[in-house]
Image (tube, rainbow, N blue to C red; front, side):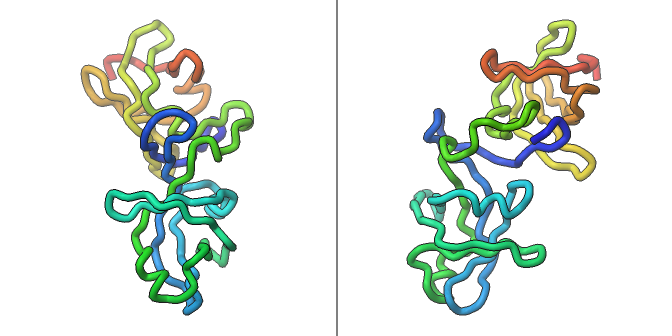
Length: 182
């Protein structure tokens, strides 16, 4: 994510082996086990850069290698090992797709962050007033939004340099230009 773009991801667990949600299986494509994938990555087809995938159905996670994938128009299509027909693909419908945090690229461009790394960070104003912690992030179309929970919930737009002034992952803090009364 640059200052204006954030990858939507949720995490489960802690550390480099925690699972980070990247999308879900949203449909079937053809009769040879291909799947339609709803991807939360930007661009959409970036989800195909990771293998294995971890699929959650119910409460269980299953590691499944990605064999092939491609973007076809607005769709992302994937072929998983062992999913060789429409019936096998149908069993995966609705499954959540995750990867290990350690699989994600470590060296992002300056001012780029994974949402999963921002969740839980303390948010403080330029004057040092603590607003709370990042609960999660959401896309709104115009810009992404930090949902900050403290003594109350605040929605802070992810607008680099105007609102978001600094992100210090080592210190676990985001500095913002924001009126604490707003």
